[in-house]
Amino acid sequence: MATAPKELPFLANSTDRDREECTYLGGMVWRETYLTGDIYRSLIALICILSILLIPTVSLNGLVILAVATKRQLRTNSNKLLACLAGTDLLAGLVVIPIAIAVNVKRAFEIGPFCELEKAHVVVFWVQSIATLTFLFLISGDRYIAVKFSLRYREIVTGQRIKKAVVVAWVITVFGTIQEIVIATRESTTNIYALYWTVNIVVTALFVLLCIIGITFMYLSIFLESQRRKKRLQAGQLSPQEAKELKKDVNNKATVTLSLILGTLVLTYLPLITVASIQAFTNFFESGTKMALISWTDCAAVFNSLFNPIIYCWRNQNLRKALLEVIHREKRENTPSVSKIQPSISKTAKESAPNQEAVLLSCSH
Image (cartoon, rainbow, N blue to C red; front, top):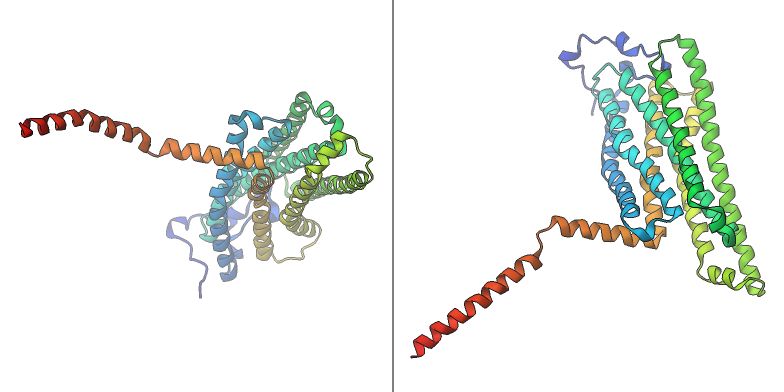
């Protein structure tokens, strides 16, 4: 039966008391006393899952950004928002997941102190989650306008407005980052941080819930609009352009896509919201169990960064084709080309052919 490892000799001078002093995180910082056999196995499983999650998250989101940047036909307003979302999800793969792996390795093998790295993990996770949710909301809003106001879409959703929306989203993200860094690095009393965390958890939970409610509202509106237009099509009440769009099944595709986004968002973020909200006002969980649960709910939320590009590539045929073209192009560039070798072989054969004929003629004489 696996048990938690003993403390390594070269870490003996780092006491448990030193590792527990972390006023920013308060009771949310890891302590050596939490490491039981079950918690140790849980941490090892978490490290394995995060390690497996790392490469596909970076690869898929990187390919989405590359495809939108290199393919002119993909540079639409909708795809620009999608590329921004892929950028925030790429941040999860490049920064959030590696730090989460490092945090759990330190916990599992008692490599203290824990405070600074865990503060970094909390800050980058919070910032990345807010950015992802903001861009998911913007993408859902774009699809809502495209379906609800299809004839005025190009008038409402312009390049300038998309740029402004993206700037606002990144300003919110940067402001949140600066705020968290300043608070995390400031020395203050434990009581102030306890109050801050209660307020922060409530505000963050409300923000996430508002995003989910907003996306749900837009999903239902798109679904109802789709049903209404189908009835009007059957009654012959649609304009030719609206009828053409409906026959292409654009509304139904948008409805299915948003339902997948909403379902994924709820499945990945709701566990974190639930555990964090319960812990903010009660001591329902034991300390070790609490930390393990929060680590697993963080991991579930990070899965959203992998599912987003999968959903959009699956539902967007043009994006899917562009990604395949990018992959094939990279393979051709990284693989020695047979076509370059073949002409040189045929050229050598042609040059040697006259010499062979001359030898045969001389032999016949």
